[in-house]
Length: 580
Image (cartoon, rainbow, N blue to C red; front, side, top):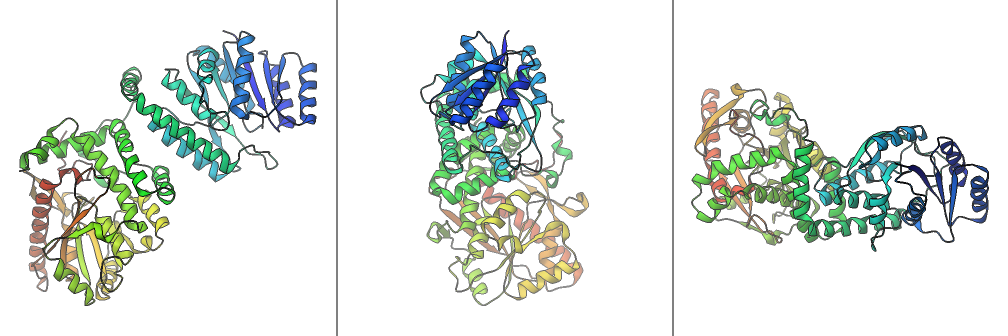
């Protein structure tokens, strides 16, 4: 094994020269690549190479970008007989004290790429940190792997031979997308990364070669090409994913969901930056592009989320015996049922943004011949209404349309949503960015108190909608839940939801918003509205009894619609709280 160091230089002569001189003292040869610098920098680099033993200078007449300079440096390394190259940026942002450690790790693991994992200080621009998170998300998609912790750090040790072979690819990115593409293509060729922390700082007087528009477009184009490459390699990548999990299984806490309440599960489908990427894409691209992308994103989540697969399978197996339509029952029992289920959920995220962003058209919504007439008549008269919805279908559609004044009524209907803000924190944050008014009408389910009830009464008296989900159990335990038969077995439903409806004494409606077709690129929705015949203008003891009847009515309707649209059930947790 023969190691060397590579420093591509463009406009960073003042920091590159002392860096090269210090690293040359470590022993391995240092290759400086002059990537088309001005005459003054060229002369300084030439003088440094002439006067410092161990430094080799490669001069390029024109600037070729970081990728182009790196490729020429690797060609020089191959001429010198080097087997491994540590590459470090010339701008002085990386902790050079880590170089010896990285070289030692490479000597111990010559088959791997030793990569820096940035530890940013307060000087790091927020846009750079966010950009890295977005790139990591796309790396997960194009490799089917969650091993990538960073794609842009300029401190790495590469094996020369496989890297140079990949660099000869005719479409290889030559500029800022190079670091990303080489690492992903190496992974495709079974040269795997391992990450170690390295401190990164941004000097206030530092020079950046990053061009915001040009390089972001270049990186986006790089990921587009890699995405197409992933599709062609999909069977091989799936096999590689399985192999990697067998070789190095991730150590996780035991899967004890039976003892873990849903309110302690944060959003599983995506973290904040993943959903933030969805929002940015929503503002830039036509919705049809996002709907197409929802299919591979759902597939990736299906591969990575063991919990999602298990809970989907649990629900579909419960629902299948009760489904009258043979084709739907067969899909529920199919091994690919959970995949269909999770992709349907992925599509629903796009539709939630559509509804709040004003890109879902009223003509694509179909009201049924049920209690919708009485519902709309009451709203037109200014009567407040208490809506009980569920995590079956997409209730965000109705809430978003109401908030934007797109219900077909003569007035805009203010909506107050009672949700667990901790569990849905990421998505609620995104909705607030998309529609600033959305975040102002959210009440935490954990903060319901007598004062909250008074506030809700005032909102209902003003003709507003109050919306709450009836299919989430209370976090306090069994004393706050009602056990109700649901798909063949008793399941817990929160008594507090239904007692709150009884306490407020407003008209109560059950609403279910269901997509026509599980996996549609041009979605249309059916809205089903059912009014509860129960009156709560009665004594407290009787009110408690009637609230229980209200819960049973809701559960019966929920079950009936689950039988029709099982793949739109988006409660990915152990709903029956069964022992596992």
